[in-house]
Length: 278
Image (cartoon, rainbow, N blue to C red; front, side):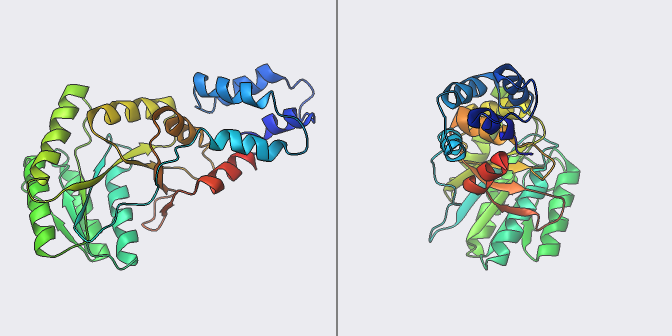
């Protein structure tokens, strides 16, 4: 059952439960991690909807809460440097590999930068993925400065005349000041040789309102241009995606739907909304 199935039934005047009312719908939506402000806005608008066009009307209400910004990955004649950020445990490093695999399959030349140097496992993991995909991964010695690895990665990508450089950044989140300083330094040293085209934030779709809190902190620390939502599979309710876009106006660009290298796709807003209304 779609997340908004009961709301549609209420609007149409056809109850799917004997004691269904607006309070129950509100409780259900709140439990799906949409957040109180967004739930309130949706219900207020939905209460004005009546008739056979209920589904299209509700879809338009939800669509208005999504970002209208471009969901395409940056492209151009010059090297496109993409920083991938996010806290540890969200699937950040795997998402870097999945995006690299997608771009490589589309015949783009790609280089990886393993700048999450505080986690030796992340460097090793990304290098292994790079070998499997058949693209070069730049890494430094254990404990190297992330900015140094990022700089070396940018220089190497330019030497190879690559079209994309994907940089996996450190996923520590001690406080906002540390985060700003670290990400700011990485971006500054890269831009000595190449512009940063995008900053993509990875969010675990099952973390609910905590995911929204992470998105707020990162968007304050650095200019986030897009989101990658992981673990957004058939069993996830997916409300956090709508909540983040509504609150921060940052477009979701990609979704991870499983553990495999190809379980990764461009986010399609209409398909996502159809799923919520199914």
